[in-house]
Image 1 (tube, rainbow, N blue to C red):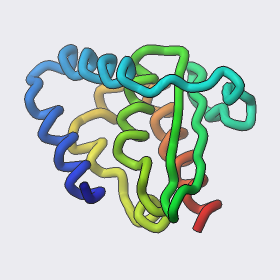
Image 2 (cartoon, rainbow, N blue to C red):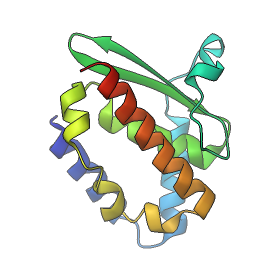
Image 3 (tube, rainbow, N blue to C red):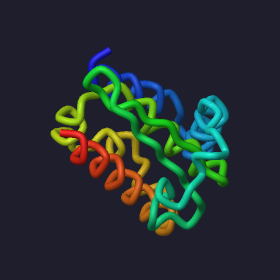
Length: 136
C-alpha cells in the first residue's frame, strides 16, 4: 500500500465515527494492537522529548526503508504513536520527509487533543522526520 493509500485508509476509518469519544476509543484500540516494545529499548536516547507522557521511538533501516517501533506509558498517546508508526514504518526516508502529515488535520486529531497532547504529537512528528533525515 502506498503512503497516500494508507493515509486515505486512516481518513476513511476515522470518518466512520461521528463523536470524538469514539475516535479516542479507536486510538486506544490502535495502541493495544501496537507490537510489544522491548524493555531494553526503553532508553533515554529513544525517548521523545516534548511529550507529557513517556514515548519511546526506535528506527532501523531495512532494505532502504525505515522500520519504526514504539511504545508509550499512556493509552491515548500509545494510540497516537501507533497510528504514526502504522503509516510511516516501511517508508523510505525521502517519502517521510516529503510528506506534510496533513492527514492528521483531516481526521481532526490536532484540534481535538489537549494542548499538552498536541505538543506531544508535534514532537512525535519532528522525531520521525529527524530519524528520516538521519537516514537519507
